[in-house]
Length: 145
Image 1: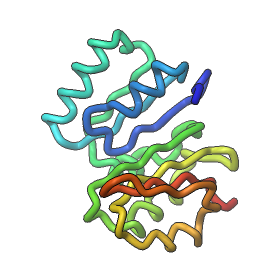
Image 2: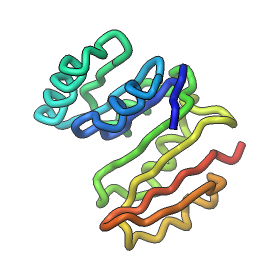
Image 3: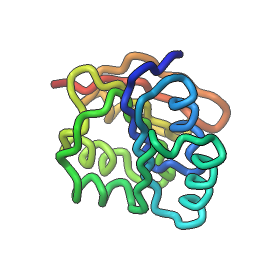
Image 4: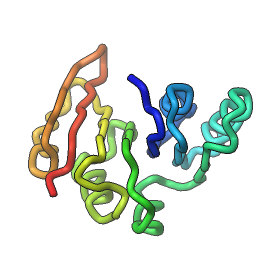
């Protein structure tokens, strides 16, 4: 998938692999949000190693708290959310809904545990695709506006 000119948000960035992959496929900018200091250092190192500092904005913060502090960011083309599996889906949805980070065309990708019931997403999102891979499931959706 090409990401030409897209603006991405990699919530709960971990190593930053998803956001870096988007940049390698042509995304114009990625906001990486990660609260764990060790993971954040890895994100920064990976960004430098890939020479993508100019297209990367790194936030050292819990993604849900950051969304409350910065609810009025310019909308993203893609929001990838891979929170810890013990984070409630409702908390994640509520956090996103209370921002201006999206518009009617924003694609959301949620990574959750394969066994988790994700029906709650259907209240706020139109599900475009859902797939289980190993211990994870991926839900691709657009928000209902």
